[in-house]
Image (cartoon, rainbow, N blue to C red; front, top):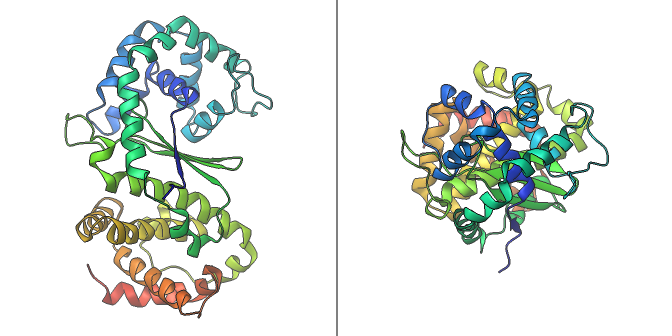
Length: 329
């Protein structure tokens, strides 16, 4: 069986990750959440120590200080055209000439030689990730919820920066997920990708599921606006974290989809662990109910009662309200 996930490493993504290493980003992320990092990330930061004052790095730091989304920054990296890193239509938020500064940073820092000397660790991350997806197809799993999926699903393992944040975005016909390994406790190094299938599949489903469901709901925005008159039975904290009915439903859907996939394709224990963690960390006390309602939809769709999720959405809030009271782990 051929996987529908394309696992790859892109030098432009590695370059942007390395550029982050030359900013204050690593220190800032540690202040928010102290954690162990991959040995390669630490070594790259040390290797680039003299480049912290490079204009490409200082400009990126300004963008970070101004809360520029990392998704936008990494998406820009993938539209740069090597070797000159030209960009056909620079986004309005990109500082003038920043792509030229990025090219100069790559040259003067000697990154090409660094990648060559560190090839083994990147090759290992790539091999581990390819192993995890070798016999995995996510499109058939997601199709009952979002319809036919024509986009390419791209998974990029990242052992550089950010070390504690997963990045996903749509770029043309590609859905790109840039995923670090799971953090271990304390100062321990992160888990290898192939020793933690639950992390890899969770990250992929969250990334692609969020992008696909957001697009699906926008496509049917008029109908969804009517359905959204019935609020979802979620906590005030979740409402604050996800303003808007579509954002709230998408958050519930991706969490529920991960739990279903883990239970059906990894183990009941991994699914239970994930649900407990989501309840503890993200306040998703409603998640067992979400899983129950989504499974009911799949069963009734298979029986012919529903043709697609849009037909089921009007009853979702009511069914979730009931399931929230009676469904537990």
